[in-house]
Length: 498
Image 1 (cartoon, rainbow, N blue to C red):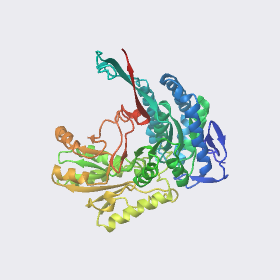
Image 2: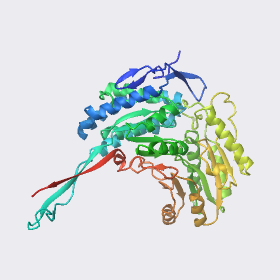
Image 3: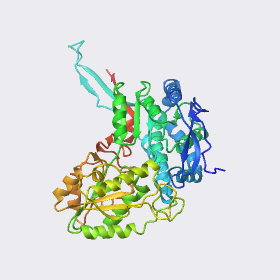
Image 4: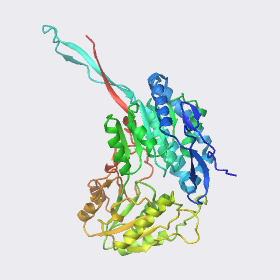
């Protein structure tokens, strides 16, 4: 008997009610660590998605939610947060079974991160207030003999309307909350569509919406694949699209949204570089490198996976990273000692294996891993895999693997390192390891990427700093002090005084 929490949810959440999918179709959801079916998720069709959009539209145009004050919505979202926290244990068990998240990640970004994102939105929402312009005197065009007209203006904020949130599988609860929290607290109504790999971690939020008393239609949750997604991105009743996923799908969404001139926020992929200068602390450099390309089996858009290392220390760096990798346990994500869990699916595993072979074919030197772990016949596991002598123009250095594969590229001058790092279609994250803080900061300013972590960064400012990319890594920013602006329109109201 299946005991994974929430995997018995077999309906869609639309307009505050649970609804069977119109076609009565369901899809198996696989535990990536065991290859066992943990549940059968409802599969929405176009009519279900259209009904969800209609419900969100009605809730925004005629419901109480957008008319509430920020203070009232803050209190509602605090209740949502408290209900979510009450289910932490069950949600953690689901995340381990649904996406293969390790114990460490469940206790960190997967669950605690989602709560922190919501808390930060609540903090930001309390600061949203109208802003006044200066009072000025302007000529009175209707009466040139008068001394003029005294007047001013105030800027207020309006919600966009109906938001389509399309999320990825790797950090599903965090990503879902990073769409729900800012969209709802600013007065929008949302249709959330999760990845087909992680439907239950989205559907459970319908239970939370019920418990916390959100008005009907404010949060709607549908499942499905490409057809469901394209319905959301093309429907004229949707005002804003927030998407997290690959750059290829992001480009398709941008094209689909163009006809209706929708606001689009895209958080896409990356092939981020970490520069290791000759004066780097090798222990810090090796630890950061190993942590980055193996975290969640490499399934993270902002992970640093290209290591651009000064040639004078490159052999020592290789050995130091190998030593760290040798200590990382691959296996059951429910085991607190496990550091690397499975990839999400058989397709993801095959993709990783393809890039490993491609790297070998292109002349890279395998220095660690490269194969399935011994003794793990079931599950989509792959050993952490490190290559040296990598050409920066090769596929494994330029294309997003989304698996535990890191590549090492040598350099001789800081200028060459910057050029290598910037020679990418992506620009999401980056890092520099150096004992010379001034040199590292100077180089960081030259990197064409959304963030740069010097000597590992701080970690404590994850939500307080803006997150987003250059180039094919996306449009717009999540987190940071201006996060809510992505979901708000500015309106200027001009008024005469006398």
